[in-house]
Every structure is written in C-alpha cells, then in structure tokens.
Image (cartoon, rainbow, N blue to C red; front, top):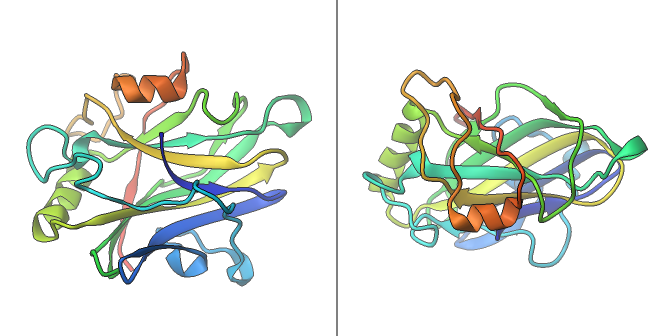
Length: 210
C-alpha cells in the first residue's frame, strides 16, 4: 500500500507532502492545488505514512499502458460510524515536482465531497482519477522530466476520529475523453487488497498551476 500522506485533527485537518531538494517534505510549503491551511498549520502524522514517489517507482510511463491515465489517488478515511461520521473531503490535489523539488503542476478536485460512511484505514477507499486531457498534460510533464516526483495535498472537514490516509496506485481502465467518470474502474490486484470488497467511486481532478 503506497501511502502518500496521513493526517489527523479534530474539525478541519490538512496534510501535504512534497519534494524539497530531492527529499520528501511535509508542511504548508508543500500544499498546492487550493489547499491553504490557516496560519500555515498542517496535521501530518509522524511515521511511514508520508511519502513521495517517482513515476518510475509506480511503473508509470509517459505513453502507452500504465501512464498517468491509469494513476489513482485513494482517500481512505478513518471516522467510523455514528457521531464520528460523516467527513467531507474539501480538496484533494495530485502534485508533480522535478527531481530537485521544483513544483510543476497540481491537479485538484473541483468541489467538496461528503462521505457518509467510511470503514477505516486499510478497508474501503474512494478513488480519484485524472481525465483524458489532464492525464495527457501530466504525461507531457513526465516525458520532459523522466525523474518526475509525485506528492499530494488534502483538506478535510468534519473530522472526529482516527487519521485519514491518501494512497496512490494504478488501475486498468482510464477516463473517457469526455471527462465523464463513467462506470466504476476495475482495480488491479494490489488495489483490491487495499480496498477489500469496497467500491471505488471515481471522480475527476482539476488542474491548477502556481
């Protein structure tokens, strides 16, 4: 399970992971795509849950099978049920950097999404995928930067319980050219292991340049 960022707070919570000088870094300076923590305070959890990945590590190429068209971010909440739920994912952003840490591009969700039920870390998650135009843009950046580094930013509200985690993986299917999410995508075996019997709800990410 390739965790990108793990974050936890009561109420509003922010988690951002990026690349500084070739090394993984957390904090508000790594928040892109419309994720702007008040006072610059973020809530990443210490440990192994905060990571960046090179495109090569994820098996991504700039064209053909397993390009950015197949990439998926999975939001895995840990709010349980009852008074702990729901939780709202206000913003999720896929962020791209050069190998030395120069920010290139952010692709973020266009609107907030409320989740009424989440079954905890390591169980069902909700996937977010680039549309055809956005994946083409990301693939062009990868072609120009073979050592491309991938990070993420997230902002959730209504948090009451355990830590939320964003994972990164690949799926077999891609978004249609129209940008319509269409049918639920078919996960690869590693993704199935992560999500158990959960259903992947595919949504689009929007590009934002800083």
